[in-house]
Image (tube, rainbow, N blue to C red):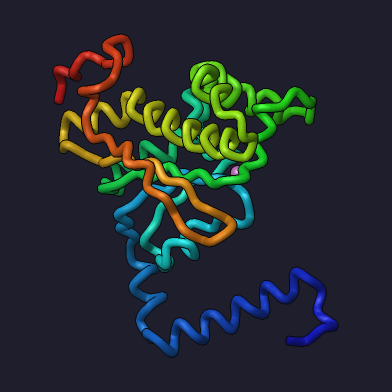
Length: 218
Ligand code: CO
């Protein structure tokens, strides 16, 4: 590697090397990708640089539709998340939606603390609600690291439920019995993903107040 390169130039150089490598493995790789995408998965993950969706799942371009934000949140007024979700579920017809959090998530840990950071405090406020909902369970855990880890898991689980509360997901469940919504947590320390086994593909277990009436036009 040429050490005189500016840091961003290294990225452009590595891009060329990657293109060469992909072409040597499959000379039609980019041609095929340029024609269409048909990913099976929507990934909702954290923006954290240590949790890149494709790399940690061994997937290649074209396989995963991705939305990332701080602390992998499903916020019902977030037009960006809702647009990605609607497109993935109704146009791409993904079979699985994965919410993937990660241990040591700075956004979630900030929600356990009382420090002001800035604008982001308003985003993190949503995670404080998750803490309040599970306060009894969390405060029974005396080991601070274990409490943090559990809070991170509970935040993922609540985001899975929050997906289930959207009309987008409920209408798809009614129409085609999918997608299956999953909750996972990535361990930055060893690279492994843990399945929290909270997968949902119906509103069966959801409190009634969140269930929309079935759309008579469908
Ligand atoms: Co994070």
